[in-house]
Amino acid sequence: MRKLFGTDGIRGTANLDPMTSEMAMQLGRAAAHIFMRRAGRHQIVIGKDTRISGYMLESALTSGICSMGVDVLLVGPMPTPAIAFLTRSLRADAGVVISASHNPYQDNGIKFFSNDGFKLPDEVEARIEELIVSDEISHLRPTADLVGKAYRIDDADGRYIEFTKRSLPRDLDFQGMKLVVDCANGAAYKVAPMVLRELGAKVEIIGNQPDGMNINAGCGAVHPGQLQEAVLRHRADLGIALDGDADRAIFVCEQGTIIDGDHVMAALGLDLHKQGLLARQTVVGTVMSNFGLELSLSKAGIKLVRTPVGDRYLLERMQAEGYNFGGEQSGHFIFLDHNTTGDGLISALQVLSLMKRTTQPLSELAKAMSAVPQILLNVKVKQKADLESIPDIARAMRESEQRLNGCGRVVVRYSGTEPLLRIMVEGEKDSVINDVAEGLARVVRAHIG
Image 1 (cartoon, rainbow, N blue to C red):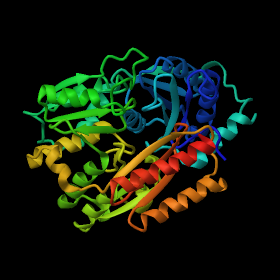
Image 2 (cartoon, rainbow, N blue to C red; image 1 turned 120 degrees about the horizontal axis):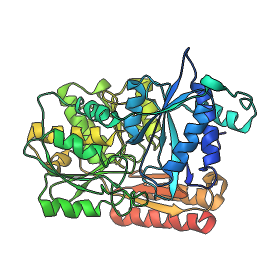
Image 3 (cartoon, rainbow, N blue to C red; image 1 turned 30 degrees about the vertical axis):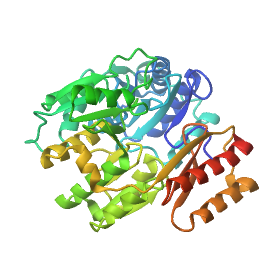
Image 4 (tube, one colour; image 1 turned 180 degrees about the horizontal axis):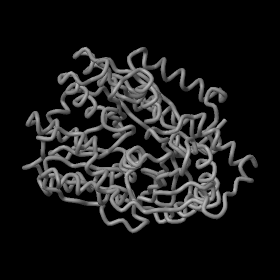
């Protein structure tokens, strides 16, 4: 049973257990030991977002890794998907990202990539935890010239920029397009504007003045209101909001309307299918994807496969069954033909490419799907108890399903990164699903809220 790792690495309030410098050093030692799989010197890439606590955790991780005789390649603030790419490009043994993604600046997190650029499987994370709590590697203390060194990779930005541009045909650019990009004062604040400007777009930037404490603060994918206003003010063709570590993107059409991930998936999935580029004629979504997505894809002969929420589950299913495109409502999109993890910039380039090739605005492309009524409620919880073990909650969940009478869905799950229970209800009528969701939320609050 993993105690440190959640669905996306380790997260917590910075400088409180488990997100302390002491724990980071131990993680560095354990990870270094696990990833020393070949002869010669070993290297681990470390990147981070713009949180003030990133300095503390970066230094501690570096210390732990170097103490095991492994070198560290420091790239500074860079998107999570950039670390996945750089780990492969630099032939490193592993990559580490210090980020809490969309969480507020007080939090931070640590997640790992193996040398192939994919996130670690559960068994490897469990082995890292085992090494931390045991004394198995405490005696491993290389000395003299066997101690690891730390190097800064000065051209990391340029490497990643060229990598993202290679996801597009060489003859495609965005000349004549006006964009607004919200970088969330996060990891992509430098590279996102550079990529889009190099491709010819006129770009207005917001959320690109990080101070260590303003990441995701009223901006970015979590708070797209600023972006909506800016798109209308600048009469832009598209608004792009990244989150703190830039592995996801939220889009705002030229009318100032947020186009959620399901509509984007419908448009992109149908386009990939039309081009003959959609592997196994299948799109991978999650249990939270609107039923309207399933309907729109099925009309074109495309199957929607659902997984639990979380990009790691999307990726596992895609790898296991040979699919190449999947995503979530939240703006995580995985294009396995281009990167090994969700990549907000590559997602933005694919949306822009579709707009440019079809000469259609996103508002029109989004009509590929009609959503059925859906509501999502977040309930703050004191503990993440087994819901079936609490009779009143278990009964309320069954009654909610019965009330929808086979014409809707109820999905109840805990957040993997926050103390929240997420309640999603989908059905034919707004009044009914609102009532069902609120009733279920009341029961949850009474017992674990």
